[in-house]
Amino acid sequence: MAEHYLEASFSFACTDAELALLKEIFGAASDMMSGIVAPAPSPKILELFSPEDEDDLWSGLGTIFCDAYFPDFGARFEAGTASIDGVGQIAHIYGTPTFQPDPVATVIHRCCAESLLRAAIGFEWSESCSKPREGEFGGGWCAIFADRIEMHSTSEALSAALGQSAPSDPPHLERDAWTEYPAHPLADWKYQIANDDTRLGYRDWIAARVLGEPHDTAGDTDATSPVPEAPGLYLHLYHGRKDPDENLEDWGSEGPVIGPLAYVHTTYMCDVKFAAAPDVMDRFFPAVMAEWCARGLSNVAGPLCDWRLTIFDDYVEYDGIYYGDWTVFAATPSEVDERFAKVAKAA
Image 1: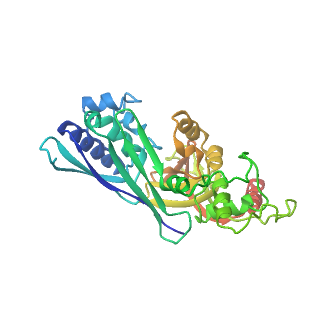
Image 2 (image 1 turned 90 degrees about the vertical axis):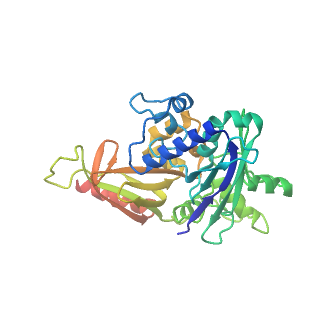
Image 3 (image 1 turned 120 degrees about the vertical axis):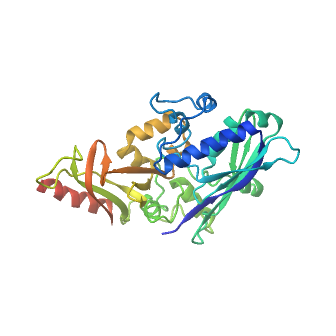
């Protein structure tokens, strides 16, 4: 497996009042990420981030994140010294390896309206990988104006400089999102996704391969020839119960087999994090995807969506059922179907 990093570090001038708002927001987000109840937001915060839930005054802030209950900026905030002209302060934001450009930009845009009328605020970020994989290094930039936010990646700038079409739209591919190209089997792409060898969508992955090949091999493979199934990573929940306090006399209910996944990660027994392609998320978490679509979040388009299951009193909760056991395994889709068909038959 490879580790992926998204990092940033920048500073900008703002007023004393704006600095106080930023400090309050980053502090509250840090408290909530640590499981600590954050102090009640100030009236100005309530004005800028109107609560979605009257019982949770910070719920308005949660709407700028992919997961409203996981307000992770992937960054730290520090109040700096007075600005050069002696008016206002300098704010410092530096991102950890999980820097999140969108919520950071949104908070600056809403909190620093007065400063943005005087001058725009910008920052850059870098993307890198622990292994020398093509297409996994790059970055982007963000320009925040009083009336808008603009973001672009280095890959877009490079494509424009080279006079090439964007990697997501190679000239020989049809504009049909559901087309499978015989020379680039879906099974190969899914295997690389599950093995964390790529985070590109199917068409982007094809484009990257085409740009790296000496010629177009789109017709080299017989479309009727069988494609060997590639193994994927799956998360299986079982030993379920409707009430975490229920004493079971048997093994409880079988749970879902979620996958294929790009990775599975548990942090301090608080939650089980994972990443999946949009079609997998739509199959197992339709309400989450519907909410993301309604809010216009870009991650619904993939190539991967990060999500998590909460661990509650040593149980993993999914769709109202509490599971005492979960396991992660690798298998092909056929092996998964065969394995759990036997389980269902035995039950």
